[in-house]
Amino acid sequence: MRGAACEGGSLSARSVFKIYKMDGVEVRAVQGVDLYMEPGDYAAIMGPSGSGKSTILNIVGCLDRPTSGSVCVDGMDTGGMQEREMAALRNRCIGFVFQSFHLLSRTSAVCNVEVPLLYRGMGRRERRGLALAALEEVGLGHRAEHLPSQLSGGEQQRVAIARALVSRPRIILADEPTGNLDSRSGEGILRILDGAHERGITLLLVTHDHAVAERAQRIIHFNDGRIVREERPGGSSATCCQGGRKELCDEPV
Ligand SMILES: Nc1ncnc2c1ncn2[C@@H]1O[C@H](COP(=O)(O)OP(=O)(O)O)[C@@H](O)[C@H]1O
Ligand SMILES: [Mg+2]
Image 1 (cartoon, protein in one colour):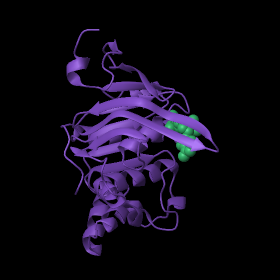
Image 2: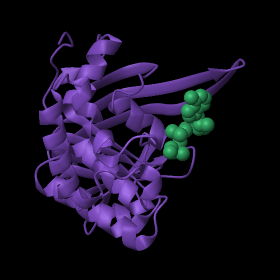
Image 3: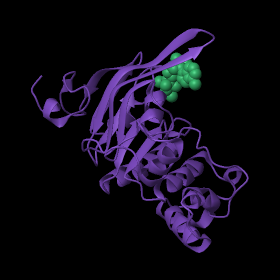
Protein backbone atom coordinates (compact mmCIF):
# COMPACT_ATOMS: atom_id res chain seq x y z
CA MET A 1 0.00 0.00 0.00
CA ARG A 2 1.50 3.30 -1.09
CA GLY A 3 -0.49 5.86 0.91
CA ALA A 4 1.60 7.76 3.42
CA ALA A 5 1.09 7.01 7.09
CA CYS A 6 -0.75 9.73 9.01
CA GLU A 7 -1.57 10.50 12.62
CA GLY A 8 -3.43 7.92 14.66
CA GLY A 9 -7.15 7.53 14.78
CA SER A 10 -9.56 5.39 12.87
CA LEU A 11 -10.95 7.95 10.47
CA SER A 12 -10.20 11.60 9.89
CA ALA A 13 -11.08 14.37 7.48
CA ARG A 14 -9.19 17.62 7.57
CA SER A 15 -10.40 20.81 5.82
CA VAL A 16 -12.41 18.73 3.36
CA PHE A 17 -14.24 20.50 0.54
CA LYS A 18 -16.30 18.89 -2.21
CA ILE A 19 -17.43 21.14 -5.02
CA TYR A 20 -19.45 19.78 -7.91
CA LYS A 21 -19.53 21.73 -11.16
CA MET A 22 -22.64 21.19 -13.24
CA ASP A 23 -23.16 23.20 -16.44
CA GLY A 24 -20.95 25.94 -15.06
CA VAL A 25 -22.85 26.05 -11.77
CA GLU A 26 -20.95 25.21 -8.60
CA VAL A 27 -22.54 23.08 -5.89
CA ARG A 28 -20.55 23.37 -2.67
CA ALA A 29 -21.62 20.06 -1.12
CA VAL A 30 -18.99 20.04 1.65
CA GLN A 31 -17.28 23.23 2.79
CA GLY A 32 -14.37 22.77 5.16
CA VAL A 33 -15.19 19.75 7.32
CA ASP A 34 -12.89 18.50 10.07
CA LEU A 35 -13.82 15.17 11.55
CA TYR A 36 -11.83 12.87 13.76
CA MET A 37 -12.80 9.46 15.07
CA GLU A 38 -10.82 7.33 17.48
CA PRO A 39 -10.93 3.56 17.02
CA GLY A 40 -14.18 2.32 18.53
CA ASP A 41 -15.96 5.71 18.40
CA TYR A 42 -19.68 5.75 17.58
CA ALA A 43 -20.87 8.98 15.94
CA ALA A 44 -24.08 9.98 14.18
CA ILE A 45 -24.38 12.69 11.53
CA MET A 46 -27.66 14.60 11.34
CA GLY A 47 -28.74 17.50 9.16
CA PRO A 48 -31.25 18.64 6.56
CA SER A 49 -31.52 16.99 3.17
CA GLY A 50 -28.78 18.28 0.87
CA SER A 51 -26.48 19.34 3.72
CA GLY A 52 -23.62 17.11 2.57
CA LYS A 53 -24.06 14.09 4.88
CA SER A 54 -23.81 11.42 2.19
CA THR A 55 -21.04 13.29 0.43
CA ILE A 56 -18.81 13.35 3.52
CA LEU A 57 -19.60 9.70 4.28
CA ASN A 58 -18.60 8.69 0.76
CA ILE A 59 -15.43 10.75 1.00
CA VAL A 60 -14.23 9.31 4.32
CA GLY A 61 -15.27 5.90 3.00
CA CYS A 62 -12.99 6.24 -0.04
CA LEU A 63 -15.92 5.96 -2.46
CA ASP A 64 -15.28 9.51 -3.58
CA ARG A 65 -12.40 11.98 -3.42
CA PRO A 66 -12.51 15.46 -1.93
CA THR A 67 -11.94 18.51 -4.13
CA SER A 68 -9.43 19.57 -1.47
CA GLY A 69 -8.43 18.55 2.02
CA SER A 70 -7.14 15.28 3.37
CA VAL A 71 -8.64 12.00 4.50
CA CYS A 72 -6.98 9.35 6.64
CA VAL A 73 -8.37 5.88 7.11
CA ASP A 74 -6.88 3.48 9.63
CA GLY A 75 -3.69 5.51 9.79
CA MET A 76 -3.21 5.85 6.01
CA ASP A 77 -3.42 9.13 4.11
CA THR A 78 -5.55 8.44 1.02
CA GLY A 79 -4.35 11.57 -0.80
CA GLY A 80 -1.70 10.02 -3.04
CA MET A 81 -3.46 6.72 -3.59
CA GLN A 82 -4.43 5.27 -6.96
CA GLU A 83 -7.99 4.00 -7.43
CA ARG A 84 -6.82 0.42 -6.97
CA GLU A 85 -5.16 1.27 -3.65
CA MET A 86 -8.27 3.11 -2.44
CA ALA A 87 -10.37 0.08 -3.33
CA ALA A 88 -8.01 -2.23 -1.44
CA LEU A 89 -8.08 0.03 1.64
CA ARG A 90 -11.87 0.13 1.45
CA ASN A 91 -12.09 -3.63 1.16
CA ARG A 92 -9.69 -4.19 4.06
CA CYS A 93 -11.02 -1.61 6.52
CA ILE A 94 -14.53 -0.41 5.75
CA GLY A 95 -18.00 -1.91 5.59
CA PHE A 96 -20.83 0.15 4.03
CA VAL A 97 -24.55 0.03 4.71
CA PHE A 98 -26.89 2.10 2.51
CA GLN A 99 -30.49 3.19 2.87
CA SER A 100 -31.57 1.25 -0.21
CA PHE A 101 -29.51 -1.86 0.66
CA HIS A 102 -27.64 -2.01 -2.70
CA LEU A 103 -27.88 -5.78 -3.00
CA LEU A 104 -27.36 -7.59 -6.31
CA SER A 105 -30.93 -8.50 -7.20
CA ARG A 106 -30.33 -11.65 -9.23
CA THR A 107 -28.18 -13.46 -6.77
CA SER A 108 -28.88 -15.13 -3.42
CA ALA A 109 -28.34 -13.61 0.03
CA VAL A 110 -25.23 -15.71 0.64
CA CYS A 111 -23.71 -14.78 -2.74
CA ASN A 112 -24.30 -11.11 -1.96
CA VAL A 113 -22.48 -11.50 1.34
CA GLU A 114 -19.57 -13.22 -0.43
CA VAL A 115 -18.89 -10.24 -2.71
CA PRO A 116 -16.23 -8.46 -0.57
CA LEU A 117 -14.40 -11.78 -0.13
CA LEU A 118 -14.53 -12.41 -3.87
CA TYR A 119 -12.71 -9.10 -4.37
CA ARG A 120 -10.05 -10.37 -1.99
CA GLY A 121 -9.50 -13.39 -4.18
CA MET A 122 -10.61 -15.83 -1.46
CA GLY A 123 -11.44 -19.38 -2.54
CA ARG A 124 -15.04 -20.52 -2.89
CA ARG A 125 -15.26 -22.83 0.13
CA GLU A 126 -13.77 -20.37 2.58
CA ARG A 127 -15.91 -17.58 1.15
CA ARG A 128 -19.08 -19.60 1.54
CA GLY A 129 -18.24 -20.58 5.13
CA LEU A 130 -17.59 -16.99 6.23
CA ALA A 131 -20.66 -15.66 4.39
CA LEU A 132 -22.93 -18.24 6.02
CA ALA A 133 -21.46 -17.40 9.43
CA ALA A 134 -22.09 -13.69 8.81
CA LEU A 135 -25.70 -14.43 7.83
CA GLU A 136 -26.09 -16.48 11.03
CA GLU A 137 -24.80 -13.50 13.01
CA VAL A 138 -27.61 -11.33 11.69
CA GLY A 139 -30.18 -14.10 12.21
CA LEU A 140 -30.61 -15.01 8.55
CA GLY A 141 -28.78 -18.33 8.24
CA HIS A 142 -32.05 -19.95 7.16
CA ARG A 143 -32.53 -17.48 4.29
CA ALA A 144 -29.13 -17.93 2.65
CA GLU A 145 -30.47 -19.12 -0.70
CA HIS A 146 -33.24 -16.52 -0.97
CA LEU A 147 -33.08 -13.73 -3.53
CA PRO A 148 -33.36 -10.15 -2.23
CA SER A 149 -36.87 -9.91 -3.77
CA GLN A 150 -37.93 -12.83 -1.56
CA LEU A 151 -36.89 -11.00 1.61
CA SER A 152 -38.51 -8.16 3.57
CA GLY A 153 -36.83 -4.74 3.70
CA GLY A 154 -35.49 -5.43 7.19
CA GLU A 155 -34.12 -8.79 6.07
CA GLN A 156 -32.49 -7.25 3.00
CA GLN A 157 -30.80 -4.70 5.23
CA ARG A 158 -29.58 -7.50 7.49
CA VAL A 159 -28.05 -9.19 4.43
CA ALA A 160 -26.37 -5.88 3.59
CA ILE A 161 -24.99 -5.68 7.14
CA ALA A 162 -23.72 -9.26 6.90
CA ARG A 163 -21.97 -8.21 3.68
CA ALA A 164 -20.47 -5.21 5.50
CA LEU A 165 -19.31 -7.36 8.46
CA VAL A 166 -18.07 -10.42 6.59
CA SER A 167 -14.62 -9.03 5.93
CA ARG A 168 -14.16 -8.05 9.61
CA PRO A 169 -13.77 -4.31 8.92
CA ARG A 170 -12.57 -1.92 11.60
CA ILE A 171 -15.02 0.76 10.42
CA ILE A 172 -18.70 0.67 9.47
CA LEU A 173 -20.26 3.59 7.59
CA ALA A 174 -24.05 3.56 7.44
CA ASP A 175 -26.05 6.07 5.39
CA GLU A 176 -29.62 6.23 6.75
CA PRO A 177 -29.63 2.45 7.33
CA THR A 178 -33.15 2.48 8.78
CA GLY A 179 -34.54 5.13 6.43
CA ASN A 180 -36.61 2.65 4.39
CA LEU A 181 -37.71 0.46 7.27
CA ASP A 182 -40.60 0.32 9.73
CA SER A 183 -39.61 1.02 13.32
CA ARG A 184 -39.51 -2.63 14.40
CA SER A 185 -37.19 -3.72 11.56
CA GLY A 186 -35.19 -0.56 12.12
CA GLU A 187 -34.69 -1.45 15.78
CA GLY A 188 -33.32 -4.87 14.74
CA ILE A 189 -30.84 -3.20 12.41
CA LEU A 190 -29.74 -0.70 15.06
CA ARG A 191 -29.18 -3.50 17.58
CA ILE A 192 -26.88 -5.27 15.15
CA LEU A 193 -24.96 -2.03 14.56
CA ASP A 194 -24.79 -1.38 18.33
CA GLY A 195 -23.36 -4.89 18.70
CA ALA A 196 -20.67 -4.13 16.10
CA HIS A 197 -19.73 -1.04 18.09
CA GLU A 198 -19.58 -3.07 21.31
CA ARG A 199 -17.07 -5.35 19.60
CA GLY A 200 -14.83 -2.34 18.96
CA ILE A 201 -15.81 -1.34 15.42
CA THR A 202 -15.74 2.39 14.65
CA LEU A 203 -19.26 3.34 13.60
CA LEU A 204 -20.33 6.45 11.68
CA LEU A 205 -24.02 6.61 10.91
CA VAL A 206 -26.14 9.18 9.06
CA THR A 207 -29.72 9.52 10.22
CA HIS A 208 -32.70 11.88 10.14
CA ASP A 209 -34.01 10.48 13.39
CA HIS A 210 -32.80 12.00 16.65
CA ALA A 211 -33.83 8.88 18.58
CA VAL A 212 -31.51 6.86 16.33
CA ALA A 213 -28.67 9.38 16.66
CA GLU A 214 -28.92 9.28 20.46
CA ARG A 215 -27.60 5.73 20.46
CA ALA A 216 -24.23 7.16 19.42
CA GLN A 217 -21.63 8.76 21.68
CA ARG A 218 -21.53 11.91 19.53
CA ILE A 219 -24.04 13.63 17.29
CA ILE A 220 -22.49 15.80 14.59
CA HIS A 221 -24.90 18.32 13.10
CA PHE A 222 -24.42 19.34 9.47
CA ASN A 223 -25.86 22.34 7.69
CA ASP A 224 -24.94 23.68 4.30
CA GLY A 225 -21.88 21.45 3.97
CA ARG A 226 -20.44 22.34 7.36
CA ILE A 227 -20.38 20.95 10.87
CA VAL A 228 -22.39 23.48 12.84
CA ARG A 229 -22.61 21.77 16.19
CA GLU A 230 -21.64 18.65 18.02
CA GLU A 231 -23.58 17.18 20.88
CA ARG A 232 -22.92 14.35 23.31
CA PRO A 233 -26.20 12.58 24.04
CA GLY A 234 -26.83 12.87 27.76
CA GLY A 235 -24.03 15.40 28.06
CA SER A 236 -23.26 18.95 27.05
CA SER A 237 -23.73 20.44 23.62
CA ALA A 238 -20.35 21.62 22.49
CA THR A 239 -19.51 23.67 19.46
CA CYS A 240 -15.87 23.69 20.58
CA CYS A 241 -15.40 20.06 19.80
CA GLN A 242 -15.74 20.37 16.04
CA GLY A 243 -13.51 17.72 14.63
CA GLY A 244 -14.13 15.47 17.59
CA ARG A 245 -10.72 15.54 19.19
CA LYS A 246 -11.08 14.28 22.71
CA GLU A 247 -8.79 16.89 24.23
CA LEU A 248 -11.02 19.63 22.79
CA CYS A 249 -14.29 17.89 23.61
CA ASP A 250 -13.36 17.44 27.24
CA GLU A 251 -12.83 21.15 27.74
CA PRO A 252 -15.69 22.87 29.52
CA VAL A 253 -17.80 24.95 27.15
N1 LIG B 1 -22.77 13.80 -8.00
C1 LIG B 1 -23.26 15.02 -7.71
N2 LIG B 1 -23.26 16.01 -8.63
C2 LIG B 1 -23.72 17.25 -8.33
N3 LIG B 1 -24.23 17.60 -7.15
C3 LIG B 1 -24.26 16.66 -6.19
C4 LIG B 1 -23.78 15.33 -6.41
N4 LIG B 1 -23.94 14.61 -5.26
C5 LIG B 1 -24.49 15.47 -4.37
N5 LIG B 1 -24.69 16.69 -4.92
C6 LIG B 1 -25.24 17.87 -4.25
O1 LIG B 1 -24.48 18.11 -3.07
C7 LIG B 1 -25.31 18.53 -2.02
C8 LIG B 1 -25.14 17.56 -0.85
O2 LIG B 1 -25.67 16.30 -1.19
P1 LIG B 1 -25.72 15.07 -0.20
O3 LIG B 1 -24.38 14.87 0.38
O4 LIG B 1 -26.29 13.93 -0.95
O5 LIG B 1 -26.72 15.58 0.93
P2 LIG B 1 -27.47 14.79 2.09
O6 LIG B 1 -26.94 13.40 2.13
O7 LIG B 1 -27.18 15.57 3.33
O8 LIG B 1 -28.92 14.84 1.76
C9 LIG B 1 -26.72 18.58 -2.57
O9 LIG B 1 -26.98 19.89 -2.96
C10 LIG B 1 -26.66 17.65 -3.76
O10 LIG B 1 -27.60 18.03 -4.72
MG1 LIG C 1 -27.92 11.56 1.87
